[in-house]
Image (cartoon, rainbow, N blue to C red; front, side, top):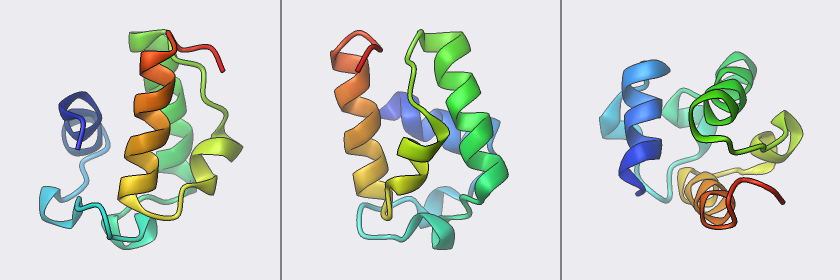
Length: 79
């Protein structure tokens, strides 16, 4: 998992790091709709990465969320 994303999920969203493995469902890892909104805002404000809440919410596993964020980070935040 991307260390920046893991840091955001653990430090900012206060998710349990033990639940952050690729196969875990995002809901089981502690991501609810408020966490999705917060993650979208943090990514935009701190990293210049624009990912809509709907797109973030479409990730069903932690691994899928990680890939989605990685793709946007690599693309410079615009996709």
